[in-house]
Image 1: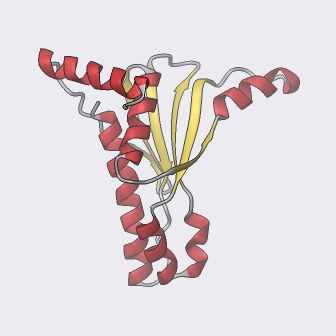
Image 2: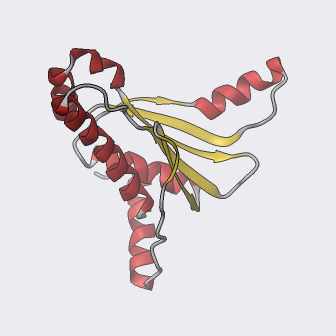
Length: 165
């Protein structure tokens, strides 16, 4: 049996396809060589669910969901901080195949695992949803670079799939 949230998302998607609504073309903003951010107008819950589905559909298990926005809201009053996010989460996961290849090339690449994709909505820009991830640096020999580029490609494909909803 499909979870209710997944069924609801499928119905929304089916409705969009039936109505012939256009899919938004989204290009990343590369903040620097280590950070790639995609932004799209829409509903946080929809893109959060789409991100989770894009990960799970690859047979990858999400190890942890960090509720960063909730933590900052909870602690903001204690330290005098302003609201940064309306909602913000980071999904952590690893690909057994890519992680093994990455660490066989260089065991110290363990620091690149788990992979993390964040989904968030900024307090000063409601309605714009951001999906972002840290790009692995590409140190080492050709085998190391190839393994890390495969991780970067996986992360980018997951985000692009989530944004296609």
